[in-house]
Image 1 (tube, protein in one colour):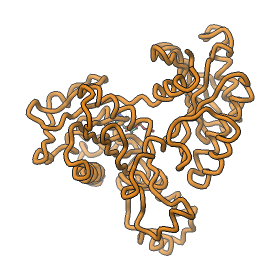
Image 2 (image 1 turned 90 degrees about the vertical axis):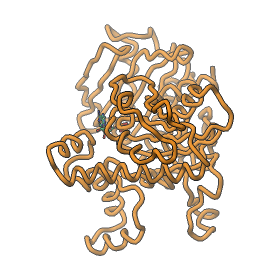
Image 3 (image 1 turned 180 degrees about the vertical axis):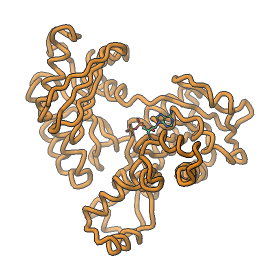
Image 4 (image 1 turned 30 degrees about the vertical axis):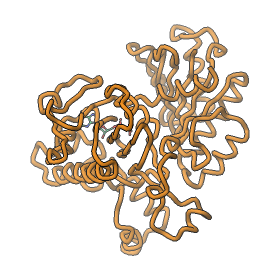
Length: 396
Ligand code: ADP
């Protein structure tokens, strides 16, 4: 069963063509800078890479070009788009409506539209992707897979904010959490590694450009660090994460900013970029710190301390930790960050093995000492595979 997985952003489109039964990725790619110079980077299998400078101006042109690339000339993988059995869409915000993935129909699109105020940057692009696919492939079913759905199992005590209750009942103000597909995939892989034992207590650290930690009990999300929006929780590439809310009016006054400007400031100019003054890319910060840059070192320490804070907090909520998992760009690739995060956690049974941790293998690996009560795993995330498999389950 061939599933076209689509992650539509405001100016980019990521996609994969996956055989949902065998998990084989037939082709993948990204269209970036839609509306500017619209470049398509396409990969066949995982060896042949091509770049098309296509000056793509709209999302529709982008999807048309992807489909053409999949079906024509020497980049051909399938004879016709009719061979695509279903389309799986990554959708940022499913609010309280969607606790699981769903087949897309008019009613589903209407509900995702209603949620735009909660995800103004992401949901409109996701809806656009669905509408274009329905237009270009009218006989192919579409499935929506939500970044928030996995966290819908969080109990009230963890999803409510300490503000008047009517803000929840009237304005839907609560913690939703994001990266749900990744937290689900990684915790599920950890459960398999722990022989499917019951009632496992798992903490997943998804550390990428956007980052979040999730406490998982018996396969279900118990708590997570992102909140109403993806701005909450950890310090990220350009996002501040949790700050004293009093900072917002203070900065607005001092820097003469309006609501839009302060949100932009906290989303795009803060976090690793803001503190270091160098870059949002952690590799640049690590290399600057090696060259003796003090602020870069402080940036790394701040970032790791915040991850550590949530690991300890969630260990308390779970009453212990059977597995601590690292994933995403930083979590999968930086032994330095993993070591710093785990440093001093030996008292609670988290003991990292330096040699195993520094191995450069890019697949699933266990990096804890044999004596460690908590298993520590590096598990590369695979959100696209979850989307393809959910799509297969619903329409296969
Ligand atoms: P996104 O949230 O955009 O999907 P990724 O999961 O790809 O982001 O993670 C991007 C982050 O991973 C960047 O900060 C990048 O510097 C970091 N990263 C990638 N490889 C390494 C590495 N070897 N060491 C440290 N950081 C890394």
